[in-house]
Length: 98
Image 1 (cartoon, helix red, strand yellow):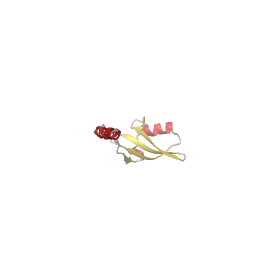
Image 2: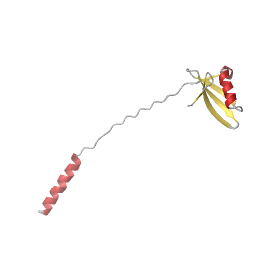
Image 3: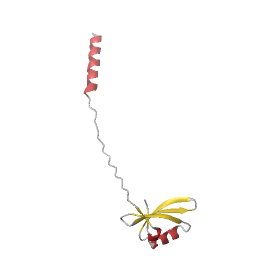
Image 4: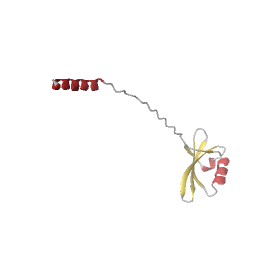
């Protein structure tokens, strides 16, 4: 009799574990990649305000290349000593953090 009762408990217990539902959550992650298209411009086409701001902020900097996007923002390839980096500026010489 004990075996019959024990078997019934095991079977019913097993059925309840299959009957339980687990919550399924769908998480939607949207990734937006904003990349401005820059086109290379001649160094002579870089506004004087930007070159003056560059000389003031980094006196030893050498401007090697310049790029411009449709918003008139400039990307500057700059070398200071043995370090190479990029700076971003508006046409009026204001630095932009990117």
